[in-house]
Amino acid sequence: MIPMTMPKKFTKENAHNFPISFILSTIYRQHTIYLKNTLKPYDVSVGEYPTIMKLFKEGKKTQHELAEAFHMTEGTIARTVRNLEDKNIITRKIDKNNRRQNFVYITEKGEKIASLIENFDSLWEEEVCGFLNKKQKNEIKEILYDITINSLNQNKK
Image 1 (cartoon, one colour):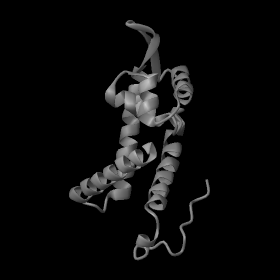
Image 2 (cartoon, helix red, strand yellow; image 1 turned 90 degrees about the vertical axis):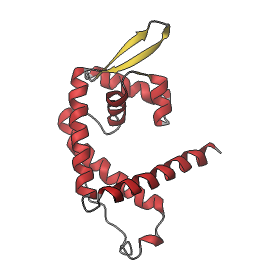
Image 3 (spheres, one colour; image 1 turned 60 degrees about the vertical axis):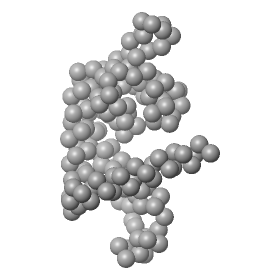
């Protein structure tokens, strides 16, 4: 993979001249590259990562709930679920109360992988944000939370 080259004018002193979307996109892309390389030995793609972690942290979900959570189509989620099921990372079970609906669960293998992913993410965050103290990290996360909510609301208009 070719390393990303930053614009020459993107410096700490000039960062205010760049859109927030550029900065967030750069961070996201670098995290994606890290995850792609880190997850390769576990046969997990970057696209499957959010589904694994959601089920690991929150337990069973319907495919509809996953689609809503990730702002994706149910078809996209269905493909992800099928791929993860083929790898024995998740399993689907029919809802006893609604036979047209499946619940998606993480398997024991999936839990082991999710635990590793959680550790990898912590290491990445520490490497990238290690110069910040806990208060600064929390402030950034709160600001990014507000930006996230505003961006979701903007797209609903």
